Amino acid sequence: MAGPSGPAARIRLIRPDDWHLHLRDGAVLRDVVLDSARQFGRAIIMPNLKPPVLTTADAHAYRERVLAGLREACERVGVDETPSFDPLMTLYLTDRTTPDEIRRARDSGFVHGVKLYPAGATTHSDAGVTDLLGQCRRTLSAMQDCGMPLLVHGEVTDPAVDLFDREAVFIERVMLPLRRAFPALKVVFEHLTTADGAAYVTEADGPVGATLTPQHLLYNRNALFKGGLRPHWYCLPVLKRETHRLALLKAATSGNPRFFLGTDSAPHPRGAKEQDCGCAGCYTARHAMALYATAFESVGRLDRLEAFASLHGPAFYGLKPNSGSLTLERATDPIPQELPLGDDVVVPLAAGESLQWRMSQDAC
Ligand SMILES: NC(=O)N[C@@H](CC(=O)O)C(=O)O
Ligand SMILES: [Zn+2]
Ligand SMILES: [Zn+2]
Image (cartoon, rainbow, N blue to C red):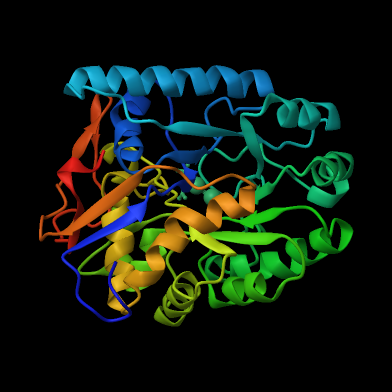
């Protein structure tokens, strides 16, 4: 492992986990799942399918499809041994999720979180919650009692609030009242994008954590408009100003165990992004660890990557770190212009750019 500033040719980490991942379903799932399983021992699998993953039974069926998709993907590309990959499932919280469903989820052992999508906030969120403390009190209370984390897309949907302010306003309008009402509820502020969010998570009392994506650590909102409109840099919450990026990078590399890795890798077919009303979501799974290593190295903190990627997440979720390892080596490979995605293609984040790291071939 490199010291705070020493240039290393290789870095070996405890096998990391991805605490925020969209795998989708069907042929798309089969095309993306191996990208994650090659690097990560486990991933929190987001439930925003169409229709969403509402019940423990839905989550069980989806988990089986993920595992079958991984086996098929390995066969197709001729991987001898399927990488060990544990999909940690989640339920999609609605106004109608019951306390009984929460207890069933907890008893299942394979559901590790319940996801709050404020209705209308992001991709496939129309079935989401309309009024968290008005509609979901009993369910939140059951979650608090049985230690089930609430995973939060932290943006208000009020059209009167500027898009770039929606995370900061969410803290005031939703997070603070939620944490006052349920101080022992475990909450993950997903894909944090602002200095306000980083300060909140750092200072909040009680069990609060946050995931950070590679795009929010590496890029600011200029990337959306570099030489023209760039749909493949568009995700929600949207990229912010440079001051916010620097605050997020500081949080990620601080060693504070509340901050951990969550790619939010969210594949959309090229055509769904390059159109009048393009979808939100960046595809980062293929190069995830190389992207994070590039971000950490930019501030001379490769020595903090392992804790962020492999230790803080399991500690928050009450799990052990993985037993295997992952090796990254220096490289200057360009990110491909596109990758297969079902009967279409996906354009990965930063397509055409060169990274400084790649996963070592003997790593999986
Ligand atoms: N992040 C995104 O921009 N999109 C995600 C949804 C989400 O995580 O909000 C997706 O499912 O495409
Ligand atoms: Zn989200
Ligand atoms: Zn997401």
